[in-house]
Length: 630
Image (cartoon, rainbow, N blue to C red; front, side, top):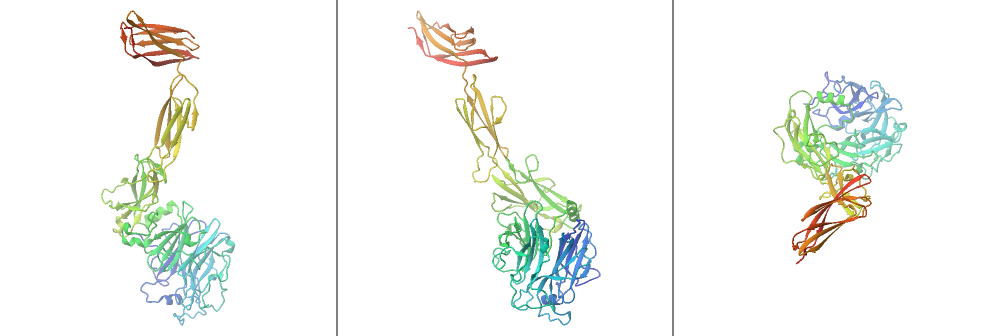
């Protein structure tokens, strides 16, 4: 089972509860700082107003070199007694100034008399900030965002800020308590990082700026992305209300894709969106879904993702957290120490067991190979597996049956691939997690299937060849792999790239031309055609004469070549060689049939010659008509 990092401190300190963990890697990359809210809400008997007026002013700090072993917490009283709370602290490194900016939400009051403070007349949350280089010593806090969003004394302000740097700016997400929504802003340069938004802070601190302070008040270099008073907000489809807060933002390790998780505080946990640019208005981000669907324990009843998205899952309870990239060593250390001991991975493999890379084209339906890492040497295997697939951008398909027996390292699961694009993953249960309480998925792997061989056609017109090769699309209209190559060769010659039209040089002998085409999935087709040669210029005439009443067959050979030829004549009535028939000469061969009448038939002629050092042998058949001497 997973183990907590933040636990009740012994001996007890502060409010005896820890919330809103925020994790940042140190500027030198060698360690981590974890910040948390000093707050307990479970069974403390206090109202939410009480916690905003008489709550803790502590910032809680942990340190670690490996994300496994953590220091004892430091309770830093970051605010004086004018504050009623210190909530959701986060940090951001200002590389230009060489310091961290730490920011949080606090209600501020005109005096420090906490005991007599009226908890029903609360102030409003500002975003406050301080700087530090070591998370031990902090500058005096100042107000960073100062917007009273209350219509009376509800305590609504701005809370839960988080930031991320991109190549072209710094982006800040902040919850507007009046609209229960998260806003997105940016600056182009670290020079503007400390620029404040809202009314100038004065003492004694104001507790009410009624009427409501508009979001456009005192604009500064923090520029809003989209229109905050319109539709530019992250919104759960089909949900008109709901309290969204505690945003986190991170960039994909592999592709230029940004993710935002926001806590649906009205019930349910994280909701996710993604975008290929941080500069898109929130309502233009792709909705990915909700984490609370996994309370069902069965993915088939989970409608938390768009119809075309692979499954993703988060446990229901985590919120107000952080996501950041780690090294492989750091990941393995965390997995071994905290996580479920079994981590399943699924790989798409071909018939020979070779792994198929992401988006690779294949020409046979592959399998899904299952392996897992038992980090804690528990000898546990997945309790069961279920196949989840998607085809050609269509809805995800969840297998009707689960695999519960025969689960072994390296086992293969049959895939239901279709022509075109596919993705597959496994939903699984870890036996150490107690049945269906937690849904886990392997990473989805995309691959492409094309089993249809290219079409090849050759047209012969004299010495001219016309060649076409195409890769047909499947009947379902899905994507095909496309033609990879088309090659042509004459006889046993070398393969050369196809041309649409090719003209062959004249030749004496017939030639076989072969064209082969291969698509990007490895399917191959070939087509052959015969290009007739000119043959040798030797003509054959078959005639007859009567000798008495007997038919005599006369075969006359005429050599039109410039070199001698040798000819063999095979008639049904005998065989005659002509060893050397000179250039431009003619010769007749007589065949006695001893018959008064002969039927029609044919004779076989073999002509041989040597021309320019090359030897040729031509076989042909010459038909003749019936003849009679009666």
